[in-house]
Length: 272
Image (cartoon, rainbow, N blue to C red; front, side, top):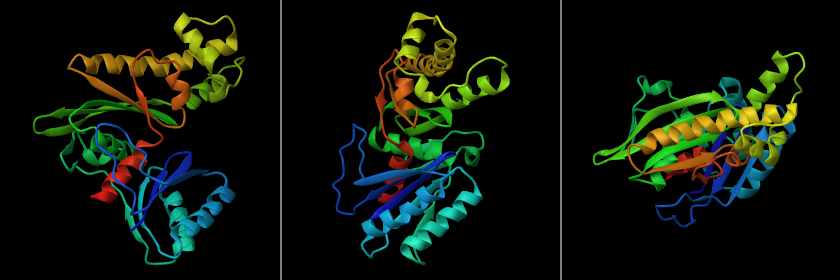
């Protein structure tokens, strides 16, 4: 059976469609094991409505299994329920994923495991599924930037915890809203010029100083965590999320990028 994977984030709904006949990838690398994918902004109903047509075409009359991770609350969950009913009718095999104390050999080390966001948990499951036996720093640069640590040991793997900080867009917006004379910048304004200013430890104009300051805060948190985890042994840094390409420009350390680790985790759960 085909599977529809849905990641309901704070700003956008991301989805991927996996055909049952797709070959499995080998471990040791992060795959993108879906044939079709897309996204829709919560604030634009027309985008979400367009999903129905796309999903119907992919289903070709046979409803898929649906796996959903939702951090956006019950209102968005209800809207997605309605979209799925419109696309496939009633009786869809629907799995709303929740954070658990463990998944396979991955143990959730949060003090209160159910308080860990399901998006972070799914991302850890996805990364660990394809990179077993490795210590991982999993960075998702989205509305918030999250840094999550998975360590591997002889008895299995463990989610150790992590950091949550405002995402790049939130940092930029907060400065503009709470200061009298600083301009409002977009994430796209934190491009190559800002990255160069981060490496040069300064900028010669206000716009670049803001962009470089926010970018340096993101990169600094990531690099500090990577160095600290690296004191225990080799560590692999994985970078995902909508702002990943911008953050990547400022990093002075090795990393790998992936489109969506939450969807990769949902894929791992769907495969069992």
